[in-house]
Length: 145
Image (cartoon, rainbow, N blue to C red):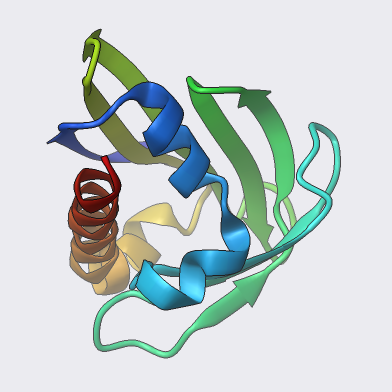
């Protein structure tokens, strides 16, 4: 198991951060990493997501929504090929610390026999993609606040 973990403080309410984070139609306008999310965003349903780490081609896959707690948490689970090769649980968490301040946690837990090999080649780009998205979300939320 391997985890990529990033976080950023956003000077905005959790309602505002959640509204922007879950406005999937606007992702192409501001989100440099998760370029697109389409589908029925409900627990148990599959969505289509397009991720584009820096300096890499976009990757389209169909993860399953496993947790959705308004203004707090959004998770999906995806697999490469079949379960056990390279599985990832992608997690967005909002941790309000004050009325207009949120710690946004963006992480992914990877499992499977190919994790060490694949992350050796894409881990740093993926981490940079998380951080780019975090900064873009912060900028969008703070402008809108």
